[in-house]
Length: 539
Image 1: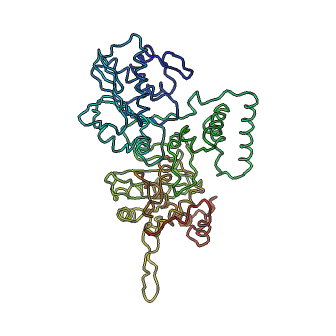
Image 2: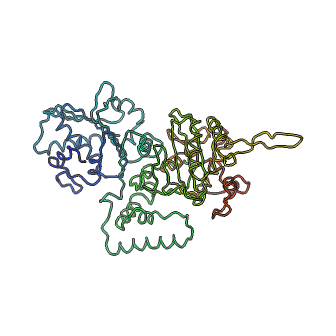
Image 3: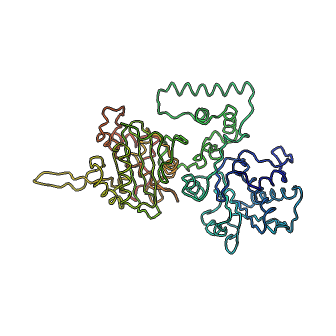
């Protein structure tokens, strides 16, 4: 439902359009969509020039005109941008009909006479907002570019009462920072903020008129890409991006032309930079710095087919399937709200991720019952759990309630000797150490060559999994790595699961043993592998 402020905006305000003309302010598609879905706690990742900042400035101005004693604050990443935002608000006021009474207007604020409401602007980090202030409406513009955003908002957000409103909007600026994490939490619906994503394909301005010659050129380009892709005979090969946009997102030749010209003329043919400025899907907003240990993987956005099963679980529609074999990986946390206990499930018949469970509040024992529940649901799947720390408790529960031959185990050291014979002992789960972790990461990278991922969260964590300055491996900055480690349990136990699940009659081709000498040498010599890892002194 539209806000009451929209009526004020569209009947009383004027703007300067892209041709420099003064015209009545009419909301575009993105602005109208946002206006009808506002919650008062909203976060907006977007492509360039969608008019979101303009809408919020107009909304704040309309609030100051119609509500008493409101304090509206707009904060941007740099002083020039901040002044431009206040200038927009001043233009709305100066061109408003009838013109409002303004008690005071300077380079930082506009004070409205009849309502005693104030519109104040500031630059991130330049003023300690939140210390003694009360802010009714707060607009954090281009927050991904704020210096130390996490530290600034600690005080800033405390100034907004429960009845107040907070709007965060920005284009993306890499991964692992505050804005990236905030958007991911909202995408998971684990946040009080509602996510509003506006990509470039829904922007009517991101489409070029085509002459017959150019239309023929782009049609031929798409056709040639399609022929080459179909001739490759590899059903798991990724679609070229142009073909992906046409087939999976309904892009027109006019939109393909817009992307092509931007790439050639403004982005030096760099598709990564284009994606960050003009994202197609949410993940495009957050391009990695290139430090990720996972250089290549298959992610497929299946939209509503990636269904929410419960508050903590997503399942790929149609699963579990009768007679399919499933491999289940788990990473165990303490359950105190810091890290997540995670279950990942892969369908061995189709090499697809089919389930993801994440919960930061489940204790290790209860998590064991949850893993068993998922295992039984997915046709008595083969389970592999990290045995470090809290995983010992989870495995102890599983041992008593789940078929033990369907729980991954590995040799224990040292060997035991009974009656003069060497007896190899096994313990349940995967033991992760500084020495074994690089091997697990290598196994994940090989697994990702043939498994298709559907989870935004797992993809996000793969992008931020790096070699840290001390030489260890883990999540960059404030990112998490729990889904990566759960996938690592799948990768580590993949070949053993095929044997234990008796998949001889299925169309699964067992993958080479990732821990054989031949496979390790092959991986080390690969140009795309990223191994050996630069510094291993800490190990």
